[in-house]
Length: 380
Ligand code: UT7
Image (cartoon, rainbow, N blue to C red; front, side, top):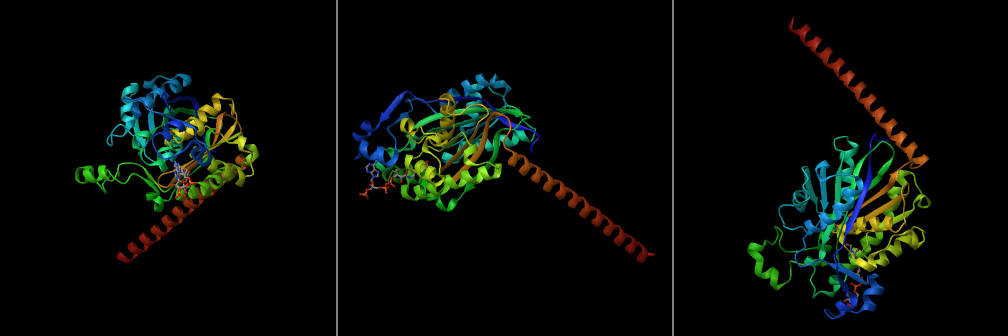
């Protein structure tokens, strides 16, 4: 069992005012409210204001999270922002957020598509468990609307803009991320990507072609990503529960990435769990990429769907292809008897490993001394 856990002590969210409905999209591309609703479950999404950037979104979700945790920005030891739509390609958006908040700590960006925030949460947890940091802000922000081609009906109906954040602080009681899984399968990188503007097709060399062929926008092989998502969601959630010694019955709420209602329904069927045990807010926001899981978590708490002391399972998946899942204990408390035994088992394994290393080092030392003695005897 770790000596320190990373407890979620504050949270916040920000969604822009502008609403883009299915009816609005009907006027822009060859689609229909009926198609979007039955194929995805999405009814509307939020779109950033003209001069709103990822750093602005991040600050707006961070401030309520800091206030709830009783922290000032200057108290922070680290800021991690999961974001694939930053203000600039370089630097990452986290430094701009650090500056706008008036924080004086390290800050970095994780670009891992829709999985980014769960990756960031797990990463932040490691610094707290290692005992090297106390106050970490973990933000998930994406302004997917700026990377979406509003002439491409296969992608533009899916995405929206949002941000959500949590503050992590140390706890001696079990809290926060209890078990996790981080996954990557880069063989599927081109199933969901922006082909242009990276080193493969620099803007400086391919600028005209990028504009003409619309290569600076998100391209997605929907059916391939759909298959990957349905394969991953239920199985990854199950693996993190197994690691924690928990059953679905022990979980208050499953909080999946909000990409498509059909993906969530499939996972619920595969896990033999009722759909109302899954947080769903995609009808209001669409797929908000790195903001999706934290926004769903924050709204689940606000709506009383999960409470302090509850265990929830998070699972995100997307570009990469990547995925990330975690069992998270809200507030602090006990996890499960099985978890304690599993942790004791891990501790015992570590202790045995250390003892084995010590014996090996001792034997090596004896051998070295013998060889040295032999060498000296020969020299005489
Ligand atoms: O955040 C990262 C994770 N992302 C995901 O998990 C997304 C995973 N993929 C999906 O959710 C689904 O694949 C989509 C919602 C993107 C697409 O649904 P689908 O049922 O897989 O549709 P499809 O791509 O197989 O297309 C079926 C038909 C096609 O027409 P034809 O070729 O059969 O005549 C499409 O052109 O639906 C058509 N279509 C549309 N029709 C009306 C595609 N998009 C639209 C649209 N409106 N917006």
